[in-house]
Amino acid sequence: MSADTDVLVVGGGLAGLALGGYLARQGTPPTIVEQVPDWRESGYGIGLWEGGLDVLADLDCLDAAGDRAADPEAFAVRGEGGRLLARASLPADETSLLVVHRADLHAALRGAVPDDCLRMGTEPTRIEQRRDDVRVTFDDGSTGTFDLVVGADGVHSTVRERCFDDWTRREYDTYVWSLWPRQDVDVGADMVSVWGPGSEGFVARVGDRVGFNLAARLDSPPAPPARDALRDAADAVGWKLPDLLETDDEPFFDRVRDVSCERWHRDRVALVGDAAHAVHPISGMGASLALQDARVLAQELATAGRVETALARYERRRRPEVRRVTRSARIEAAVTFVESPRLRGVRDWVVEHTPLFELFVESQVGDGVGVF
Ligand SMILES: Cc1cc2nc3c(=O)[nH]c(=O)nc-3n(C[C@H](O)[C@H](O)[C@H](O)COP(=O)(O)OP(=O)(O)OC[C@H]3O[C@@H](n4cnc5c(N)ncnc54)[C@H](O)[C@@H]3O)c2cc1C
Image (cartoon, rainbow, N blue to C red; front, side, top):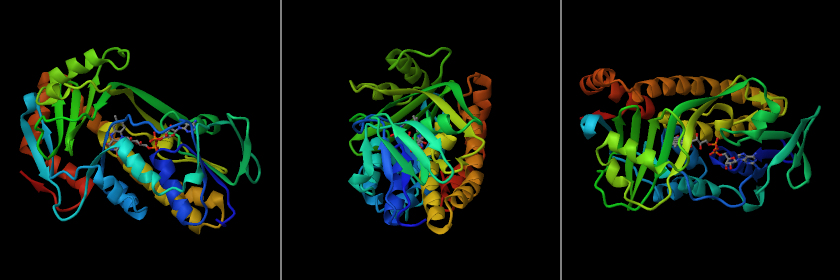
């Protein structure tokens, strides 16, 4: 890709900023259009594993993210009433997992992108693929011609909707709340997954705050922010979750979805991150996948002579990992959100008495996992 290649990135989320950071370093800073006029502070807690941490290190953002994150000692899973089922210690001599609020991770990544790359409060209304370029019309009436357009615009991607046919967005009967309040409640120094009937709480202390995501299957969608349903779900899970609701903060609330796309590139348009392949959040891998997409796409754009070749190589390199994570996320969701008391009992016994959980954590971290 030559220095005068014009790249448009649609979406200044995690993947969009990381791609912007890499391209700026490679001497081809893109234009990034972001639909929101100002960055929001709302969001949810994210567990970021090795692949995502590598990207932060590449872009010199790891320290900035680490300052607002927790580096837990262990990952624990708890069952009925908070009973400890398994606990895997994480390697002590390196950071293999950071728990961080999405807004803090996003703020750290913004440090990698020159300010003049970003156009806030802007989105495309028309994307026209032509023989040798892509012509884009924006909602403020302006137009631009680009050598490449990258959709980094998340699970509801406009670029995917306008330029790709063969994709599906699956809506689960699972809803997720998140709170990140200042709290004195003692939740220990581990990242904890607590399993309730058809529900899961994800809890970690980060400084003087406690990050808390709660996902639960519901028969019908409640109106946001659905505080009553949140209270019921927290009571059903138990452990420290009901105490963590003692805050006036407004919870993040959304439905769980995943996205599968037959193709992530067409001519001179490509998709990255959730736009291409949103995975069920139970995997704890969507952000790491999005950041790795950005890294690999930037590498291929730097080395392949033609944009089309770079896009094909990018998709070929990223497909296997995304396929693996998507499958295992669906299995994890099926195992986690079990409602039948009998099946929950069997599952909890297996997790407590076999090395299954240790093997799972090892698959995220590699060697160095200990078991308690
Ligand atoms: C509750 C919850 C918990 C999660 N927990 C984890 C976790 O523990 N670990 C993990 O790795 N992942 C987790 N994830 C997933 C992770 O947050 C996503 O996979 C990740 O944010 C995807 O990054 P992205 O850049 O592709 O999309 P996003 O971060 O969604 O960014 C998309 C950006 O595009 C912008 N945009 C949208 N449409 C347009 C448009 N038309 N024009 C211009 N801009 C547009 C949006 O405003 C946004 O800024 C979780 C997700 C949820 C919902």
